[in-house]
Image (tube, rainbow, N blue to C red; front, side, top):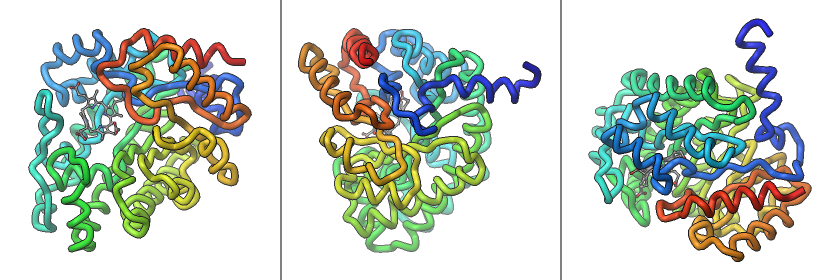
Length: 355
Ligand code: 1CP
């Protein structure tokens, strides 16, 4: 094989993770897990300590690539997900983001159009460049058969942190701004749409072969607001990426969308739908039948903590219902820190034992 461009095309066809997106229903579905890199792994805790801070870890390509590879070495997942965070986008835009040990993220809140003027999309190049460097390293270091997922937070979910200044149970500050001043809030969403397109485009150019848009707080909005702040921005990102990279699938994860998930799929045009823990497996198997979409999900992350025969039984139930479908096995939300690593091994073994 000659040029590296040819080589990439040839090897990409060997990545079984991508086959459901090409129309194949596999007997043994591809598997990866949200937050597959993280604190439940001792080697992650060691690398994080070496980095000296969470954002430093995200912005040090050698270390971010290392923690991305750790779960691949242990479990041989079909896809790796770039190690970074959805809050890298506000950080790169110039809103100070800190991670307080044991408390989660803290940001200087943005609550008005005047506050928005402090953000600068032209500033993102340096930090996005470091993330792209991680992606490029990963494409070199990953096994050929392992797909690489890039990601961003959906504009709505990222905005909830930017406006609240931290995580919150109800996303009240963002929801109130959106009601009181939809044009001002819309400017923030528009900035996030444009910045996310740039960010994802760079990740694909650096070697990502699939993208996921995390909308963790999609479920906190009533239908009309869901349309405006979840569906429309996601569709804009999806369309832009399709124009730039027609062969790169985009998975949407509108956590908590419930009955509006089917609407989300048909209106955004995503290629994959991540189902959350509350979605009944029979809904995963039937609700999206009329959509041209790959379904991903949805084991309870706490069942992965509990382990035992309940874990095996539920895995079998999901696999039985999704048999013959274009399906990717995943959790319904991210792995939690108290997960015993051997339970993850048990899960992967159980999924792969199918035929
Ligand atoms: O102390 C630590 O090491 C930090 C823990 C941690 C980790 C491992 C955070 C802080 N982020 C991450 C990595 C991360 N975050 C990934 C890496 C790839 C992977 O292995 O999956 C991804 C995709 C995310 C995405 C992310 N960050 C989301 C969307 C998905 C989800 O879990 O809902 C959200 C909401 C965040 C914000 C965030 N980052 C970190 C925390 C603790 C939080 C949640 C804050 C809150 O709501 O209170």
